[in-house]
Structures are given as C-alpha cells and as structure tokens.
Length: 406
Image (spheres, rainbow, N blue to C red):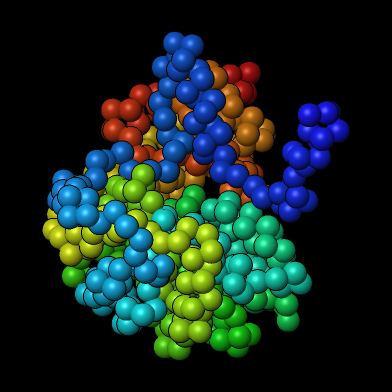
C-alpha cells in the first residue's frame, strides 16, 4: 500500500473533531504510568464506587447465564425488566410510568446519545450545566447542535440560577440537560428550583433530560428503596413527565459500573425512534445482565444504605480536611461522591494545581476545567476511596500546596 493510500484510508470524518473525552480516564492513565515507575498514587480522580457489586446481584447474573440467557432479546429490554424498572420507580416515589416507556441500554451514556440523535439537529441549541459531565457538551456538538453552557456558580451552591437559564433560552433551544445530584459539584436541585425551571421549560416548549444517575447517593434524607425522601426532580412537577426523559442506571447506585447497565424513561413519541437507534447500534442489552438488574431493584436495599452511609462518613472527613488546608474552601455536597473545592487563592489554573498534586503529592484529582469553562478555579476530588486513603491524601495535599505560593 502506498503512502497516499494509507492517508486516504485513515482520514477521519470532520465530525470527529467535535467529539470530546473524559479527562478522568486520561488522568487515571497518567497515574497508572507513575505507579508503573514505583510511585505511590492515591486515586481520587475516578468516578466509580469502590465497593463490590452485592452478592445477590452477581448470583442472579450467574443464574441467568446457566439458564441460557445468552441470546438476543427485544431492543428496548426484556418485558419483565422494563416492568421491574417501572415498579421500582413507583415504589420509590419517583415516577408513575408504564413499562412501555422504559428502555434499557448498555450503560446510561447511550440514553444521552439516543435522545440527542433522535431530537437535535444543526441549528438547535442544547443548554447544559457547566461545570457538568463533559459528555453533555461533547455529544450535543457531535450531533450538530450548538451547546450552550448554563453556569453553576459557587455563590448559588452550584445550582442553576433560573433567571440566568431563562436568559439563555432562544427560539432555537431544543433540549435542557439537568443533573441532580450533580457531577462534579455534588449539588442538588431544590423543590423551588424544579418548579421554576419547569415553568421555563413548559413556557418555551423545551424537552428536558433529567440525569438522576446519582439518585440513591444523597444525604438529605433516607435511601430506603421504599421512599424517595431527600430527592426532588422536575418529574415531580405536574405536566413535566410528558416532556422529560429520565436517565438513571445501576452503575452508581449498586456499584455496577463495569456491568454497563442504564435505562431511560421516555415520552411515548420517543420510544419507537429510540428503540430503532438501539437496533441500529447495539441491538440490545445482554439478557443475563438484565436478570442482574432486576435482582438489584427487587432485592434487599441494605447494601445501598451501607454504601451511602460510608460515603457520608467520607464526605465529612474530606470536607473538613480540605477546609482546614490554607488556601482551599469547600462546600459540603448534598449528593454523589464528589467535592468541588475552590483553589482560586493560588492564582494558578486548575490544571496546573491538579498536575502539581499528582506529581508532587501523588494525589490524582481532576481540574475543574475537565467539566467546562466555569470549572476554572476548582478541583474535583472523588471520595470513592477509603477514609485512610482520603486522610493520607489530605496530608499530602497540605504538604505540597505551600510550594505553589513560594
């Protein structure tokens, strides 16, 4: 093959330049590289629970494999799995819906992809939280829409300002993305927030993506599988279920990140188009993993409660520890397992400080700008690690940060 032919066959489509990535995996790779050189690294960068999947869920998957659940199943999911999701949402007080509006996918990210592919096109605008999960902007840009950042500011406890949201809406706005509890800030919407944002959405005929993948990991109320206390959603507002897509999954709530299991609840008109996208991309979600998904929703809730209780303990340690370090201030998050402390006092970029902590302290964290332009001046630490590791990280951070002011 000639050099000319090689260039021709490896030329990327222009749209690939619009597709971003997740910095957490890049920092993880750098940290692993340092570990390979013999360095000890404390990992506070990756966003996944450090707990094993509960045993009854694993056993359900094994039983499914032994029962021959290794073949194609309907694209939107097994009927009994869709029924299980709908029943669980009802039981937890989150949403009354029918199974035919539920679609299971390999992970929760496909819900974002399928929704934007099905509804957004060139000329449309997608309003998304900034700081926020970087895939919102990346996917919107890739499908040809224009991403419009909605700033989340520390002075408003990293929650959207409804007046600012209203000012960003134009006749081209198609989709509003909300995430509560929130990654990376750990903030959560209030009932007043939801009521005001719902009014804006209905007045402007907006479609809403409600990313609630951290629903179970919240600290203002219980986590009982039979009660939805401590969590509010746009779906609580009358009329919003017909214009809102609920995104959730098993990764965070049940320590099942590697299982790749997510679901969406869609307005009826979107179920068939999204199912068609599933058929054209992944065909279906594996049958035996759906057996595990049902076991998670229908089984004991104690493993989730125990995990959340441990996260609550770690939250206290890391928030108190960060606020005790000269130059850092940190709000207490209401959910998820992240803190988003301010490091503005050092007068350096977030990336410079994150790089310094990795190289000098052996602590892997993420620059706030990994989550958007309004993340400048902040870092994200995941406290999905042991209390001992968190305390060691705090000591290491406190030891090397003065070097930045020298």
